Length: 444
Image 1 (tube, helix red, strand yellow):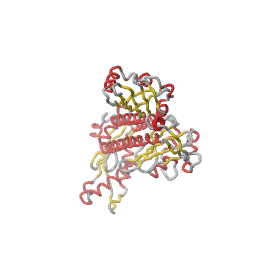
Image 2 (image 1 turned 45 degrees about the horizontal axis):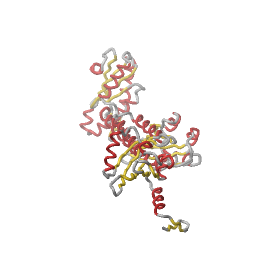
Image 3 (image 1 turned 90 degrees about the vertical axis):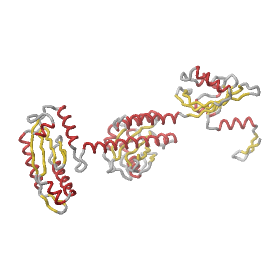
Image 4 (image 1 turned 120 degrees about the vertical axis):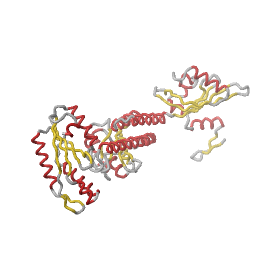
């Protein structure tokens, strides 16, 4: 048979040669055995996939070359029973290549029988499913971690470390993007703390490295040379000393479409991602999205359970939780409890409407918060009642703060175009003098 090459030259190949060419061009690894199950032929893909040259494989029994302890005598007996009956056999097997690296193979064995019905040859087609297995393993482990309610940062650290184990040439980072479109590092296990510290709170924009730009655009950004790419003008001095030369970042989008994070690969040489990188990143972006969705759902649930939806202040449930922890941690620390009840609040609701009453409560909450120090706690107890807990506070300071609150609330408040005076009744109890638990202190 004459075949014309790309140069126009006619080359004569016989059918055996064409068969060998076709076998070498397939994307499957292939071996053929004789009746004794010894290898008599391997194609080029077999050598590429498993590392064995033809001279090293031919004459070998596949069981000796590729077999593992996971496949026992009973398994081989069942295998040969099916093959001798003329059935094709499909298996997913774990083996090792010539270097000792683990390889997962999707294996199809096809028996060839002679006219007398005796088994003459086995043809084996093998596809490397190691990459697919690695993605499936990563997905399973991350989903388990999310289902166990592990902290978000732990989940993200795990993803980065797992990916870096698959790709030793890669440094992996995950950043969160808040609703104000600012960056907050979640995981960068192979980079020094100065990296995360430098990126904390940076607003995203059209020229903020690979990650900030990817978040800004809402699409992947590949920078193959950080040293020369203008997207990195303001940040290359941060990562070049760490040995990072290229960065590929993908946005993590929630189901709502909002960009909530970025997933990035840094490379130690100028380059872009390969196909296998792209497959793993696609899976990781999806996993990060699920983790972020769950985290935000839990935060929303916690906010509903522990925070007042109108003022954003902790509610009575959160107050008890925080105080129980504080009493247990520092039982001898003095504290003052201020219980505030807005005077004539019902009149505001009845005459001006509930929206005016809500506006007044928000204003009161804002004024109270401005009077507190770090460590002090304020909550909306319910209705028009607020509780302020002053940390490390003696009776004189408690009285002084109460007077200051009176003065602040006395300042006129603009509500729906009207200037309203606001006063409040304030009761004070002291810990531990007036009680050692929240209920007793509130009662007193």
